[in-house]
Length: 187
Image (cartoon, rainbow, N blue to C red; front, side, top):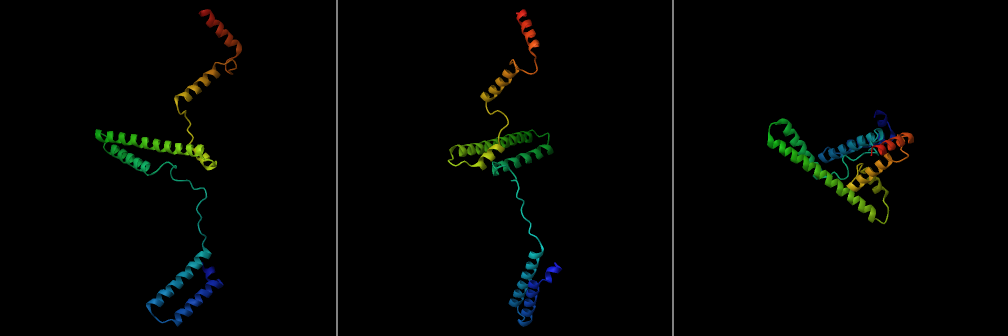
């Protein structure tokens, strides 16, 4: 900071302020002007000396895109009721209230997430221009488990189809033929 004060531009500002202060009358308006000049001088010195901090380019949002105010309120209510339940574990009404708050929080979060994903899906399907940003969002929120019973039955069928096929890697052909012959002899 001291090296910046010896800079020519800063020295010129200091000389200008001191000359102005010597020539000006002593009044409250002149004192405010002098104060403003000195403040400008220090701001200029600080700008040249100190580096501005830049926000990180990879800052993540605090919550998911679908997590809005209603989800936040439901979560706060659930946490409050949890603390009350821990404080008064014998109270049946507090435990019931906590269960209801917990259910309502889960229901709210699930409905908001489903609405968000449905909206994203419809935006992608109905859009004339493909938005890769929307595809990336959808990929991030992709569900791991099967969505309905037909998908679960399909994966179940594929699993057992591979398990009992002739080319299954765990059962060799001789053992399989022996087991089939033994099953035929029993029946």
